[in-house]
Amino acid sequence: MDHPLVAHKLTQLRSTGTDSPTFRRLTDELVTLLAYEATRTVRVEACRVTTPVTEADGVRLSGAPPLVVPILRAGLGMLEGLTRLIPTCEVGFVGMVRDEQTLEPTTYAERLPKDLRGRQCYVLDPMLATGGSLAASVKFLHDRGADQITCICLLAAPEGLERIQTLTEQWQISFGLVVAAVDDHLNEVGYIVPGLGDAGDRLYGLAE
Image (tube, rainbow, N blue to C red):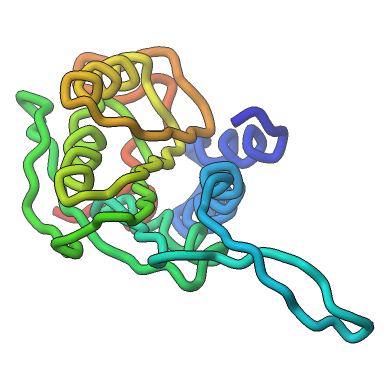
């Protein structure tokens, strides 16, 4: 997303001088900006309202409420930024952990409706690094019938973008992706460079 406020807040997130409370606030603000773009295709229907002067035509959200799915745990730090824009949304959760040796994701928890047919879903994951967790989450939602999936990330690596595109094309899944920036590369342990470090640790501290 090419916007000076997005670039400004992302620069602050990258800095090692940004403490956890400030990091959480900046993430919240940045996600609200990204969500503005990500929800451009949210479904609406025509309606009519009475103003203090007369009647006016407008629109309102239509159909089943959108489902917001943060990938635990770092995705939780992005949740409020989106629910502020769509307070009527429902929230599900997917817990995934990356094996630090193989860099492959494993699902350890999920709380989602069994039937997502006709639902618009928004997946929240700060870092699109290797692409495995995000791709697996997209497939998870698609397999339950979600017919429109949009992912929101703070940062992406070229390797992750290539992998998620390859996997979703193999699975014949269409999805949208909104990111604040695409960085240079992944290092040997799968971290985005220059990146901003481990988003979960910077949001919530170490959990050892």
